[in-house]
Amino acid sequence: MNRWSMLILVMTAMAVACSPATEDFWFQGNLEQASQEAKKNDTLVFIEFNTEWCSWCRRLESETLTDRDVRRELGEMIALQLDAEKEGAQAAQRFGIESFPTMIFLDPTGEEVERIVGYLPPDKFVTEVRRIRTGDTLYACLQELQEDPTNADAIRRAVEGLLERSDPEGAIARIKKFDAQDGHSHDTCKKLMFLAGRDLHYRVYLRAAKVYREGWKATIDIPPVPGTNKLNALYEAGLPELEPDEQATLMRKARFEDAAELLEMVDLDTADGDAFFALAAFAFRGGHYAIAADHYDRWFEDPATPHTADMLNRAAWQLYLARESLDTAVAMARQAFSLDPSADIADTFARVLYISGEHAEAIELEKKAAELSDGGRADGYREAVEKMKTGVDLNDQPAFETYPGPREISL
Image 1: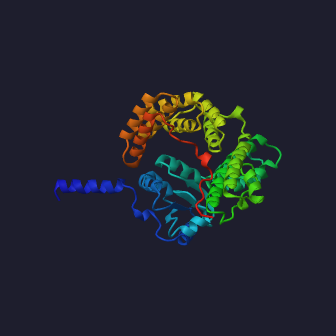
Image 2 (image 1 turned 30 degrees about the vertical axis):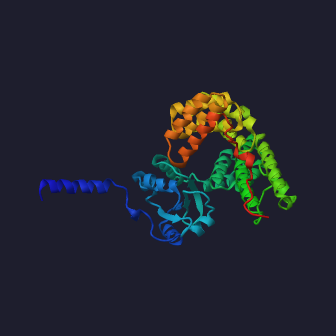
Image 3 (image 1 turned 90 degrees about the vertical axis):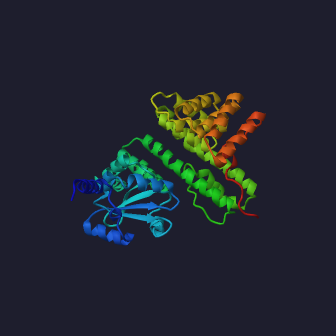
């Protein structure tokens, strides 16, 4: 063998050694077989639930789940991939998987101990898996609460875990049980109840809109708790029997009032910049535009809080739709565009400037957005340019104003 052949052989061996593990990393079998293998080896089962259409699943699989450090951390577990709409449909329903990718960890008995929802880059994924391997899991939190019902840190982590599992009802039940105990600060419960109520509010109103549009062909569970109290009362009083236009008006009113009940729970004196951003987004979604504007102002004025281009753009866009705090919206959009002069941000900046009376600059920015885009998006931006030239209203409005949307059936 000559030295060049030897060099190629060595380089090939190094490449194989340095490359991520092959498909053998994944367990070749179903969930029942994986559980049996985990029980035999006294280890965890790791399941990645994905779908064919999920782009974040593909990114997770190509960037994170092939990473050597990630696979080293998962290496002692039984790792299984399941398509939630095919062979994994039954398992996805069993574990309440509603978004993708979702990864769950089962103990050797088949009980879920933790989950990760959404894409994470390799370094953050490794941190989460190490936490789980050390036993810092939702299951451990629930055990701690059983041993000490007044453990504030445990209830906080338990609620976060339940919300991560899209289980706000379970979180609310835990918070109520915790709040009934003595020996702790009830302010903690108010904060947690807002978080759980916010998630429940979003899920229930989304579901209610869908059932309304389909003519109430399905029943819907609406808990009588903060965040859904008003809608529950409407539904119990016979909402589906009313005229469709009256139903829509009452549902929108209930959504506004339920959001208000949650917003009243928040102690603004203890909120930081990140909290104000989250509160603003929730207030905007519930139709409380003036409150949203006030919270976005506070967030923007806080020098200790990071202001990314995406966050600035989102805040400016919502202020634009609500026609609130337009000077702040212009400042936000300008800063966002300086950080990221992309088409979406240029479009937001242009529209904010347009309704602020700066038509010439707005038109140039909207042209820029069109130049940076193609297809239908570029056509939309060019159409906006023509409207701006004539000075007409762009007719953009918050989604709350059209909730719950047009009926999808003929009555």
